[in-house]
Length: 143
Image (cartoon, rainbow, N blue to C red):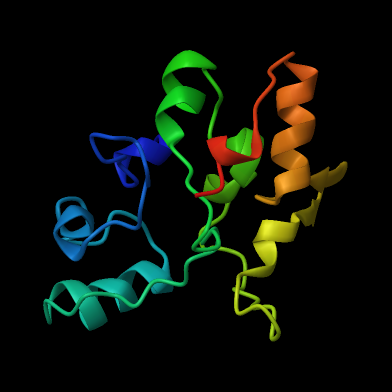
């Protein structure tokens, strides 16, 4: 499966978002595999029509505007370049929240096989843009 099979961007590309239950239920009305996690998800959410309370791993600060559209359509970036290999396991990594900022620790990157995967912090964005020869002002992202 591709990331966009579940996480679809809005028309303006501002947020890929977490899927609503109706999107999950399209495939998960019955078990597709042998995992207990999937059986539990179907029993707790799909059958009861209760929306999951998803942990948001990549929430940005309120003063940051970000669009996935130019990164996906123009730069042809793959989701994994910023978000890491999310879909390679049966369950997502445990959600860890920074107790001071309230944001997921994933914005700071996480240790992966072979090194650190970039997070969603400003320094990672700037480093990538510089590497690609792109120049911007602060107001391109900060509103």
